[in-house]
Length: 60
Image (cartoon, rainbow, N blue to C red):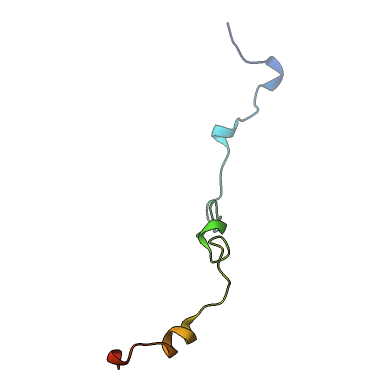
């Protein structure tokens, strides 16, 4: 006894479908939104200029 519907003979299922993997398809982002400055509650940009200006004298 066959469990297939007689009206679906010759129809290919998803397992038989050809999948083109040549494109760069991104499933997950490289960085989540909570792993950004804004996600941590910080201002965007940076404070590199301030950090360089406040270097201790013994670093020079």
